[in-house]
Image (cartoon, rainbow, N blue to C red; front, side):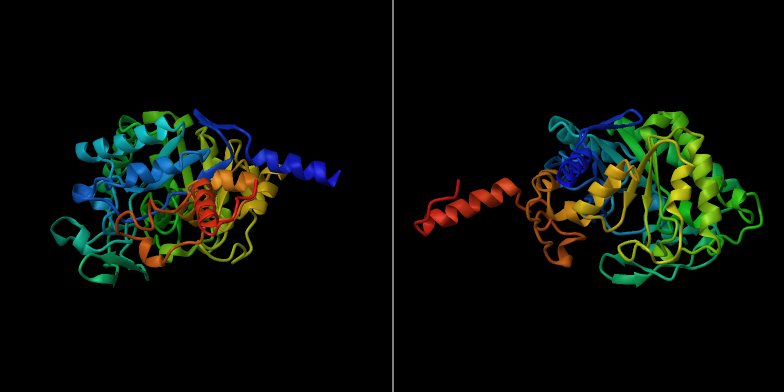
Length: 387
């Protein structure tokens, strides 16, 4: 019976699913991964179409975090989705993924205070909810890693423009051929910074009480849902992560409210980073089940999952989808490797993660390529391949 249960549990991870209007071949998702390889004009780089098409067997690809405007940039060589050239660049990528039968959405972000004056028009200060500098760094070409700049607080009269920028970028994403959009509401970037009482000290309609601090992310989500359809919109949150120097005095109450209200929009999915980004999953006590109970749609989880953890999460009903980051960097055919419970590639050096060309980006071998290479090596030694 245990064997039968295990087989059924494993199958669940590879079963097709739907997330709103998105048809997914399986429950395995490629998480958004910043790779800093955009070209001039912040157009996706020359190897990006190959990179994403290699990973098209994922049930869903969430393309890397992408700026909604020039003001939204916070890191070197990250792509945008607001100019004609950027849309044309992304169209090559979505066409390549669709040609392989894949489904792809793009994560839209405004980095907010996690930015530097060198990325801003005329060297202006980046923007945030309040004039509070983030205790974090960014990468600036020619300077390396530097402290982010002191932000200025957005004026109340600027809020409609921010909301409009998200809406416009979501429409341009659909024009670029994406199947949908994910809003980056996590990791200390603009939408998340407005949520937290540690980074939002405003006293107007966008600060103070939880309902006010949640106003921006809910308004943005509503406008984008109205623009492209709520069944093509997802949102990512990271309730307890301190990435981007984000912190709140009562994250449980805050995110209970946020999720309850996002649920009213009929989103395609909610993407939840559990624990500390890239770190401990139980960094502080937090009841994720309480959040899940407040959301009726597709529930996606992330952070440090391996094959067995993903199988257990989906089979138990604790999650509908599981997203993987670094495992998809090293394993373009992660779905096949999980299906066969095959060995995984090791990550190349961290210097290949951010920036560069094809190396560490499109040259990780698939399982089939690795086996072919092994067979060639065996033949060179006068051995017969095992069949």
